[in-house]
Amino acid sequence: SSSTTTTTTTTTTTLDQQTEQYTNNDYLDFDVDLIDCRPNILCYASVMEAWANSTNSPHSLGRAKSLLERMTSSSSSSMPFVKPNVIFFNSFIKVVQSCPSEEDKIAEIQHILHTMKTIHGVAPNIRTYNAIFSAISSIKPSASHEDVKIQEALEYAIKLLHEIRNDPDIVFDSYTY
Image (tube, one colour):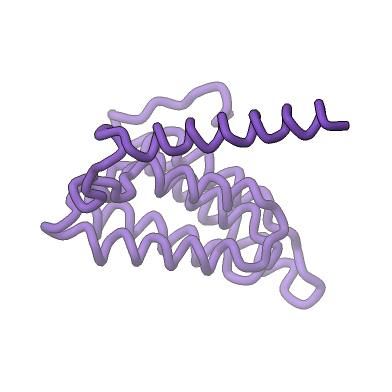
């Protein structure tokens, strides 16, 4: 019994000594304010992708909109590296697709595409359009507006297909077909 007590005391003393040694070293003494640890586009895009992958979350779309607003309100001169990019917007479109609410998915997609191109000057790529087509295909008819919703989705998809065909910078890939 006394042997066990001695071993425990020795181990505790050794851990205390190691802790003291680490806390007294100069390399641990730094000014936190000197570390530039602000989120960048990769952080924001990763969060957006996580929300896109959290299916059936009723709050994902609202959080995605808030994230874009937060990015753009701070992406002036103080944090220019958080300007949204095409990857961010592609993930944003996936959030719309995974949203359980069927209300106004087309309007949300149109708004995102407009914001992307007009406000932020980000050119959509074929992955953007593929994400849009995937989101459009996820629209389910409702009992009250079945024909109208599906017709609107088809018309928008056809419009986008014409846009892609007229854009020499975008080439269809196998996923598009």
